[in-house]
Image 1 (cartoon, rainbow, N blue to C red):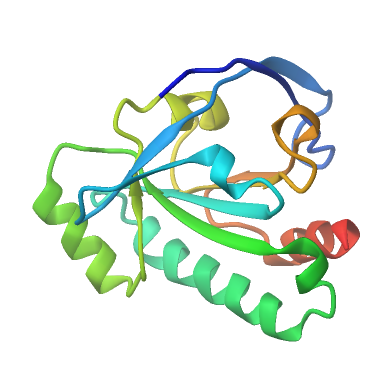
Image 2 (image 1 turned 180 degrees about the vertical axis):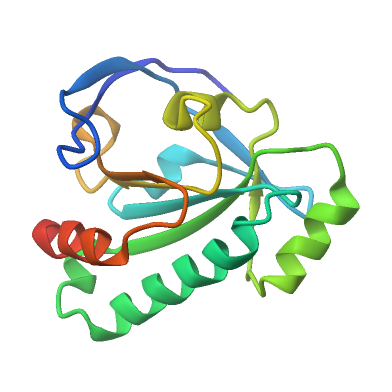
Length: 169
């Protein structure tokens, strides 16, 4: 896969005090449990909620199902969902134990989950601040004009997340 650098700005005013620009790479994530991968550019046209987790992360056992339940509920209740084309992407950031990761995915009842094989995607968005991490990226106009609209380390504030998603509609 060709790697492509694109200028990318973080615009999370309630979480960060300033816009931070950095080079954003085209990333490819492996699907857990199957030998397939997905390029993040395949999500162009969508607003994507990334849920970063690890099997050893105790708070992730509560946050991951809550995040996924929130997104499904928002999609059902929202009149703006068709405009948002909201996608949920669970991303494992630790490749140390495939068996434990698969158990986590099964226990959380995730339909699919992805592996950040080299950790670069998490490193860029999470800046190694911790888990669980939720990042919402607006990709409706493609990578070149995308922006991070929500970023939260720890258990997310669903009131803030809902407000951010509603503002996008």
